[in-house]
Image (tube, rainbow, N blue to C red):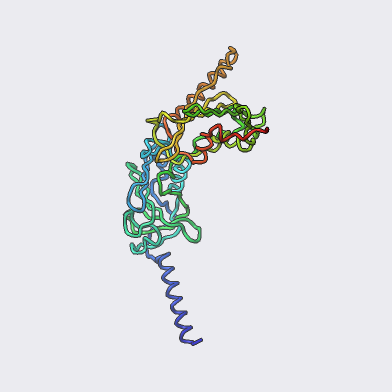
Amino acid sequence: MNPKLVLGLGFLALIMLTLALMIGRELSTSDVPLDEPLVPGLRDQVNDIEAIDIIGSDGEIVVTLRRERERWRVREKSGFEANFRLVHDLLRDLAEARRSDERTSNPDWYPRLGVADPGVSGSDGMLVRFPDAGLPEVIIGNSDPAGLGRFARLRGHERTWLIDRSPEVPGSILGWLESAIMDIPASELAEVTIRHPDGDTVRLRPVGNDSDRWVLLNVPEGREAVSSWEIRPVASSLAALSLRDVRPNETMPDDAVRALFRTVDGLNFVASLFEDDQGYWVNFSVSAETTALVDEEMDAEATELAIDAAAVDGRLSPWQFAIPENRYDDMTRRLEELLVEGDE
C-alpha cells in the first residue's frame, strides 16, 4: 500500500478519535468540583417533595405527579395511583446522584448526549421538574456507552455531567401508572360464574383441592366439557392481571358481561366487562361472602372479611381498566366455547 495513503488514513482516524473524545468530554478549566450532588438541595428535602413534572423531549408534559392521600397520583388519569417504586427510585437516584465526570459545555453537542432543552431541535432527553420546591430542573440524557451512568444537565446551566446513577424516566404516561390490578391465582378461587346479557351462563369449580383441575358444572345433556387444561385459563384470568389504560367508572353499558369470581376465603369479585373503540374494559366491585359465617364465634372473622372487602372495593370500583384482549376473552367465555359433542 502507498505509504502516503497509510499516513493519510492514520491521520484521518486520529482526527475522528479526537472529535469523539471531545464530544464525550470537553476539556475544561472549570473550578467546579467533581463528586458533588447533581441536584443541590434535593437530598435534604427529598422526603418533602409533593410534586414532580416530567417533560418530554418535544417540550410537552408527559405526566404530572402529585402526592395526595399518602400516595403518588397521576393527574392526567383523574388521580389514579402512580407506580410507587418508579417514583421512589427516581427521587432516590436524583437525590443521591453525584457528578462523577464533567462533559461538554458546548450547546452544539448537547443533542449528542441527550441533554438539549426540551423542544429544541435534536432534543432527546427528559426533563424533571419539582414545582414549588425551589430546586433546579434537571435534564436526564442518554446512557453512557461504557455503562457508567447517564448524562445530565441542570436546565439553565452550561455544563453537562456524567452522573453515577441511571434514573428511569418513562416517556409515556402509561409508563408511570401502577399497572398491577390484582393477582389472584386459580388456587385461591372456589367458583367462577360468567353470565351474558342473553342468559348464556358458564359455571366452573375446581375438583376438590386440586387447583389445576377445573370442571364445567352446567354441561347440557348430550354434550361434554372441553378438557380441564382448556378450562383453567378462565379460572386463572385474575392472576397477575395488569392494566393497559385506566379511566373513571362513570358509565357502564347495559350489555356488559358479568363474571363472578368467588375466593376460598369469602370475597366476591364481580367483573363487569365490555369493549369499545378504546379497548377491552373491566370494572370490579368487591363484597364479602358472610352467609357461611353465622356462628357468633365467627363475628370477628366476618368483620375482618367485610373490612378487607371494603378496602379492595374502594381501590378498584371507582375505575374502569383496559386489559389485554386474551384476558378479556377468558373472562367472557360462552358456554358453547367450552363444550364438545358427547359420545354416542
